[in-house]
Length: 92
Image (tube, rainbow, N blue to C red):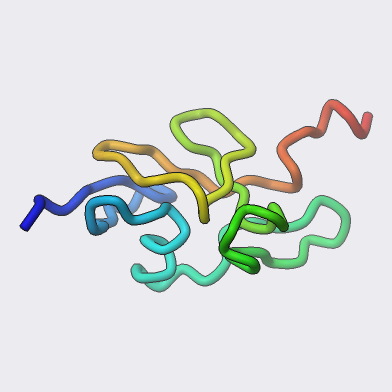
């Protein structure tokens, strides 16, 4: 059995299974939503689970626009919620 993976989300340590996606690990830890839409602040998390909808965007190690459903969690990752699409410069 492989060793479990530790990462942080909003400063909280979370333990995941090896090979688990960020989205699956967050859901397993009790987080159902971690992003709000830019226009109306509606909560978002995993919706499609296959990388089509972009509802599950997170910031991984300072890089925005990562789809939590497709991104494999790695030891020591720092995951933060993402506000909107992470492309605010496009809407100025």
